Image (cartoon, rainbow, N blue to C red; front, top):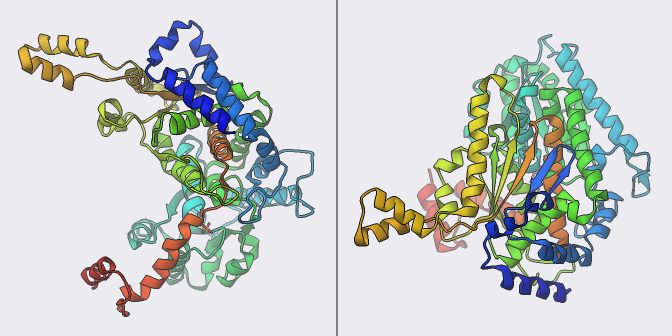
Length: 535
Ligand code: F6P
């Protein structure tokens, strides 16, 4: 295994000074270093990867067993070893005649039944057949959840705004009372449905927000409050204890990881927003990406290629972050969603065998939509001392044909940024600009340095015809599998999240101290801050 890494390092050393633009001397570089799957095109030609490097990277994928690990995941093997669980979010969108066995049971009938129940519920609400106990239509839905029970549905609901046909959907996640206060204050409890979404039904933020929302409902509608509740969870016992009618509880199994869960009941608010038909199209898009991931050759396989580009940038080029830059305002929550998907999955320093990893794993993922980011942090992307590989997303068409001029500007800006990152502006050209502006001597040199762009900064672009439910399903599944590929190469378990536990334990212990209990065993800073924050 080390030999392939050695070869890659050797390769990197021999090409690292080369300019990316020089690779376009090969006339079909774009065609060769891009790949398509249904409605998605991945262009990775603006990276320093050439045919020899790609061959080594695909060998790395082979030698680290990416294909065998992928097949084990799809087959329902318990690849989440630290939690002894299968990883089968793909089953929620599968349409297979082959049984999917977990712990001796075919999971397909249960998934189909739950999807049907969700559809009946959503259709009932849309048609007005299911109303509030007071006989009114539900106008608003508040999803109370956090992490995987919030980020995916919130992101997808916004992304699919042109398809909204149901009640308005709102999301409350933060335990900060400001969020629930500001959300509920705009709503009429008599026509609001609360969805309490928590895989475990123990998460303190969600349980606290749920109690506050139930109190708000109760004060307005009295004993009929239960008719305004639904739940999404694996913990049916706990949801029953909260008084939620089992007929309004949509269950799922522990082999669906929280951050991979929007394809099933956690996607209920998405389905309420866009309707069952569009939700099915969303699942179909993800399924198309699953099939592509399982069948396309490695060097034409989008999740594998995106993963290998990630490995090249993280482990060979040593870039510590990557920016996700959707030129699609409706994907403005995609970076936040990907932060959980990627960083909670691959932000780890221990391999599946318990040994410390020999090399860096998951990078820091961040981003904002274009063009907003251009007027904020792109300065650093172009001229900062850190190189940040960028990932652009752009549609050929917007949903606003009357505003074609806007979309043309959006596309021009997206293409301009990846071009500018790659080409830069050499010193001589910057000096000419400075001279034209009237500078001379030392002042000209200083100005020219300020106006020089080093360039040679890599990016990939994901292009698609339009942000439809199908395309969104493809994009999310692509990123899920990219995380899988990278995690498999690093040899870590992408499906646990032990790193979130310590803070939770300490918060539990600190709560009484915040409320006045003795804190003398705490460190000086914590004690000092407790004093300063006491009310
Ligand atoms: O604390 C992290 C985490 O466990 C995430 O993995 C999960 O998505 C989130 O909390 C919410 O968990 P739950 O859906 O069980 O409330």
